[in-house]
Image (cartoon, rainbow, N blue to C red):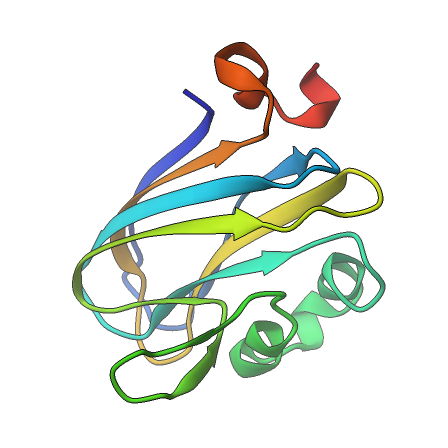
Length: 148
């Protein structure tokens, strides 16, 4: 159980590189995000933003002026590839099947996270499933803080 976002996205053009997927308010105690995907092209990444200054508010204020690379650099999550040590903004998704579980650290107060899909190298071609969970047992974990 949890808030589920599923998609099967295929853009015909590489100019359509950024897609908003949804948001979820994590409890101050943290939470988790599970993702699984099957990507038809490389270069895709899930980007995460929150309500802090310079994050989602910046995306909203400057989206039409931001390049794909600049948008990616605003992402909260930065990952390192275990195989080659390369650093990437967001959660990089290789071509083929992929799965990850992300733990969200506790914060002083609940935080809304926004999720986007981006590909600065090619078009979007992916089937995915996201599950967002809050702490609190089976019933409460599936709800965003604003839905309780």
